[in-house]
Image 1 (cartoon, rainbow, N blue to C red):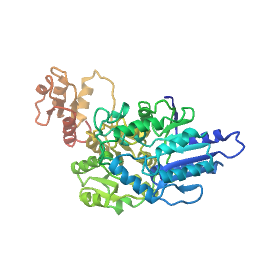
Image 2 (image 1 turned 120 degrees about the vertical axis):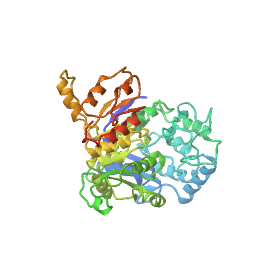
Image 3 (image 1 turned 180 degrees about the vertical axis):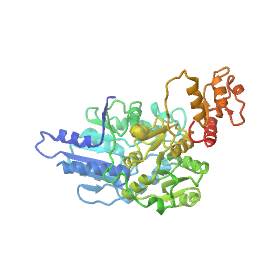
Image 4 (image 1 turned 120 degrees about the horizontal axis):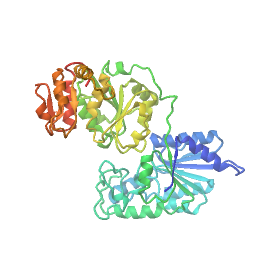
Length: 485
């Protein structure tokens, strides 16, 4: 797999213009996606608009949630078709192998257009027959671009697997053990077809010649996964998604007054739908751990049922289709938290940062990759240090790095100025720095290893067994003398 990096999807417009040079006519460019709206639909429409403005003969087709607009912007699936496709998938777990009538109609339209480029986005979602589509692509002259917004293309069933730590997709889904995610999208009762899906998708999706198909991913993280899959023979381009910075920018509003936030430290999360994979339980736990008089947890995108369930614990708000309202919320927040580990890009992270709000994201995720380092804080994927991170941000904590000093007077001054002295060493026989800190009146937090515990005598000092317990002790002690440690 060869991998090329680019900053934004704007590069795709330039690429299309380059392909069209010498044709003597406008380049014909077709995009296909499950939805007209939503995040992937917005990406498709933005590219369509950019291509059209530059003189490309651009077409978009989608499967659901919006009627046909004109002959260049068309819904390609019938309601009966996608409903039937969804029901059959629920019983037989063969998403992508139904909708033959709707797909035949789409392919006739493609024959009429005779595109130079077919750019697919999500081809799952109960609206197209993947075998018929790829048979057409393999036999046509067109260049194929396939933007992956998740991992469904190279698994036997699921769209994401990081949360459950499944690696079956690298070799053969459901070959040695059953799929652990049949209850997730696309939800199914069947346990019989995951392995068959994997084999069929591997055969179908690798049928287009390598010189005619390029995989596009919104992050290096997803590109690396593609490199470990059966799609690894295809070249990969990394094109970070773009946001509308004319909308997502620091925005003044009455958001805090409107929702009773006041001057509390506001922690914001945005998703739709909210699930465990999106980190819902992390926010609920955080709401229970933080002082509600000092902190406000605000979640946007909750269902009516979830709003009723959580409205007493946090500020629970429904999904909004207004980008301007989102910009107001981002701008009002003190920090935006994205606990998810399966996002392939993290549009909300980019939007929040564009509004001037610092973000907290999971280590090793695609969100950590795209966030601006100067306004980003990463925490372990299990969110074990999330509370400590939020509290530190609220208190304006900073790290001061100092060189070694041989001045005992200077050391004594530093010890005395601190709220608490933290000694994370695990092998000292008898660390004298603990004695020095206590002698200066500063409580000590140290690990209960080696001879560390023997060096503390103050009732305010404590020996802890691990980092999590240590962080809790630091937060408790930091209120005794001021705001440093």
